[in-house]
Length: 221
Length: 168
Image 1 (cartoon, rainbow over the protein chains, first blue to last red):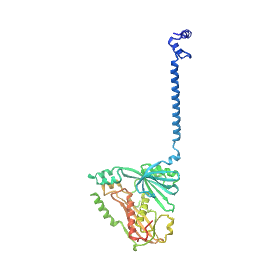
Image 2 (tube, one colour):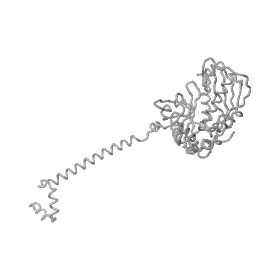
Image 3 (cartoon, each protein chain N blue to C red):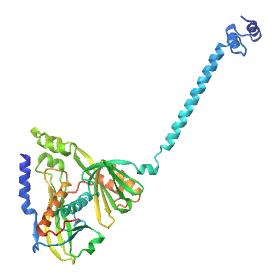
Image 4 (cartoon, rainbow over the protein chains, first blue to last red):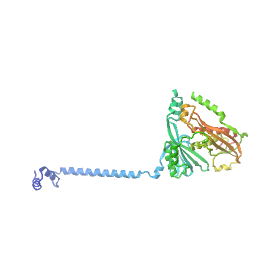
């Protein structure tokens, strides 16, 4: 035991082990190795805290910029099938439809068809269903043995329809029909209305009608 | 088996579906304007209404009986000297079920009854006809509008002579 330890033990009335730990932490102590380790540990702590701070700052910044802005929400695109009515687009062409500030855009196979918002006269949604297995494969299933094609017809998926009435540059009336996944037509219509598209049936009224009414049937209703 | 049955049904249904009046022989006109489809007291979904309109325009253009096929509201239609106007009024609509149709073949058909009227530029009736668009077996409900467009095109072919140049 060193003289310093003996003095401390006598003066403070501490145990030998306590004093030894204290002495090792004193500046100028003969055993400097624990202090170096402690300094190293503190440095690592600072680095960790700094890194954590940077990560948190970056995360908060990204979160702030990723908040859905009104303009970004308007450019959300939906998968859609063009049934009929858009100029220079084939029937049953699959693509993506989105609403920008000035136009309704339908993109298919790299080609973009733009419909000016100002030319749209009306936008109406509807509900329908279609075979789960459609197209050429669906047609071929009608020839499947044991009438299994009929069985496959039982499997259907609900779809939404969006009917858009618009005028061309010469004043001619056009009607375009798009089909979308269930529930997306109303969202797209809301976005269109937000951009200034006129509609004869508001989204709220339409949703109420869909819940309360059944499909139209019968003559001269 | 089912296809043969469906074809038989469609051939049987052809005869009473179409009735015409005031047929004064084949006409000749360089332009036709197709008015928006109207419905008299029939609750017709918007997609059917616009699909009927678009299919009629497409099929009439394909007949190549007119140099110009104008849409409803087209400003340049007024300049055509011998313009014929086509008015279509839906008088009946039965929305069937595609699933029932595809499973059973015999039920679930979609039918659209339309009164077709052709007038000249002065509004005088050239001829009128009741025709029907329907889908019995293949296709979804909107295919009835395509069927109607084909039938209107057949009416145009039967009643109008081809002009020197094709449509468009």
